[in-house]
Amino acid sequence: MAQFQLNILGCGSAVPTMRHLPSCQVLDIRDNLMMIDCGEGAQLSMRRQRLKFSRLHNIFLSHLHGDHCLGLPGLLSTMALHDVGGTVTVHTFADGAKILGETINFFCRERSFDLRFNIIDPRATGIIYADNAVTVESFPLYHRVPCVGFIVREKPKSRHIIGDMVKFYNVPHYKMVELKAGADFVTPDGQVIPNSRLTTDPDPSTSYAYCSDTVFDPRVAEAIAGVDVVYHEATYADDWVHKAVDRGHSTASQAAEIARLAGAKQLIIGHYSKSYPDETLHLAQARAIFPNTICANEGLRVDLEAAASN
Image (tube, rainbow, N blue to C red; front, side, top):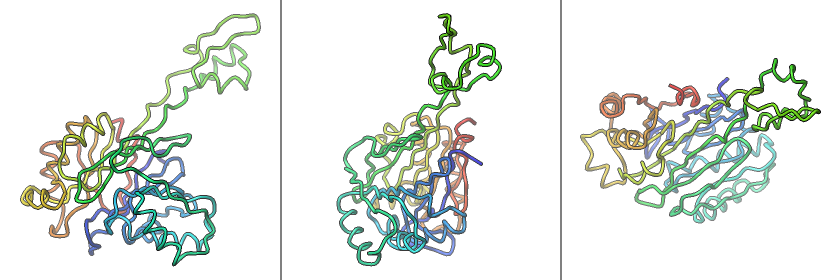
């Protein structure tokens, strides 16, 4: 089981079609689920992909166009009917908290969970959420309405204990946490045993960037520089670059250029226009600039740690 896994629930743009649902994805971080955008069909996609409502406690909305948030009232209503407990926090703009809060309160007054809103400033860059495993940072995107992207970064991991060595030096069990954090061990007679003799380096931490609706802008690449895996909208192929500019979107080639400038290891493209019969053209144009590109599709699961190590 992957420890940091991306699940694509929806990767279409504007409206649901027979091929794609609107934007929604879920990160599974050691069985803790975090949703990014919540288009229509989100709750059904969670069921199909066997993602448990009870483990979803944070939902991040990139902006307030309907294809990115209209699935939220239904999802939360179903979660209440399933008696999901604890706290569910929706990270959105002030307008989102007001509009969505009123809608949810009207249709779902009796809730089994505590619903909270964390207000995002769409003009700012900074950490908006942190727990023991990850931080989530928002940064501005450049769409027709206020819009942000998100960077999810694993925190530094613990060092690995060398079992034979800690036995040899009779290291007490209660010292293991300190060793994993990098501390040396001092024996009862005062001898200092270097941490490097007792542990090995930690596994590398992984980072993931979600770039929702945006025109091509080098500032996006600057914001996500050094991120391992990037999801970037690719609404159009190059034949409709003029529409991308007019409607605040990007082409597949432009998404690939952002990934190249950012120094990413893998690119995932999505948010496809319904005007295309498939994503063959998108993929070919993106790979011409950034070869390690894959297409999002409903049901796709990506082991982000594995993708970052390739």
